[in-house]
Image (cartoon, rainbow, N blue to C red; front, side, top):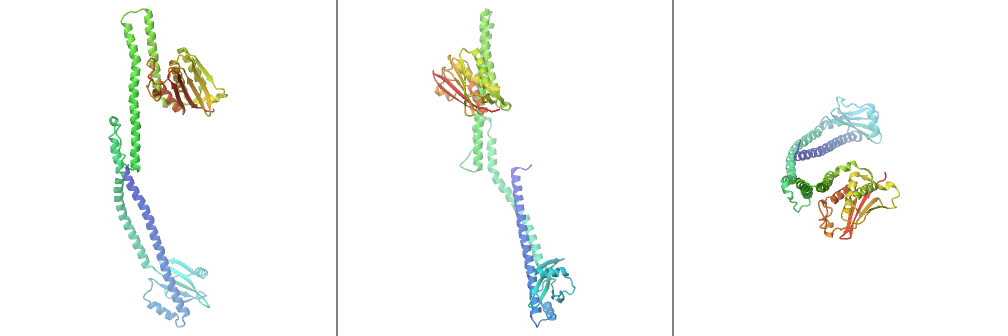
Length: 454
């Protein structure tokens, strides 16, 4: 398995190889086309010159032209020249061996197209149509481009050699470049590796850069901030949960120890057991809420359609047995279809929301508690209002934090976990809630939940 440095090096080499091959092939093919064009141009010039001498110059006949051609020191390798009249009869040739074969189809092709090029083995042949005032002649000029092909071979050898050397140099350069490019990442890895549970407050040095490395360091620092906040919250939660669980358990053990000191009247046993029962109930409620808080995200996978009004009536019925407050439930006339009462969610969690808010309203008030369910656009609005002790403005900003209790609630039982649980449940149901309160006047909690058509 290659690391990133090796992968980058290999990719650099592959990219260079592809580009080099494409460039080398382009150069080679361009030069090959140029060689061919240049050689056939030489054949064309040779053919035109010989035809003019034989046909247009009266003093030159076939014998003299042959002597001229044999005395030419600038002949092409394997050069052959043949001229035919309008009947395709040979009137001049330097091809004593008749090595260039021209059939009737080739003659017709030349007479129609003017210039025709073809190869016969290693020999390149050009046929042209030469026209004077009276006749139309076919001139066949051929030869071997030995020098051109030698140049082409030399070019291919140079390109191959340069490619090998270039790949070697590119591999070295790519490895050095990849090492330098990845050095900042190695520094980030080293710095992150030094951060553990004991020093979560430590941060990476972001410097003053604005490149991807600086952004990566900034992202790591933000993540570390979230981790530190979550870790601190977890430690605080564990500490507070331990304290809250210890209080009722200590109270129960203390009462049991007192009872066991001596025999007592039955009324005293009944009183003590009732007190113990209340402590056990509070302990059970606290344990249930802690369990819900710990696994609240798992409920999202089991969301089903839930009728909110049914949960309200169930909670009202249960709490009426526990508290003496009069609980008035008011359903808005706008809700004229039971489909508007349906919510996609967890019945257990939503029941916990209603029970927690309604229990607080009853606990902190001796007067009437009013529950209102209305419809606003695409949301159900549950409002629970009381005329109780209210919440101080300074406490209101922290009221949803875990285990936080208002400064005026010392005389009331509770753990301070209820509203934190309510907030988390409403969040995973894509809802919102707002609290308005005044000391001595009362508290109003508004919960907005999106309804679903089923």
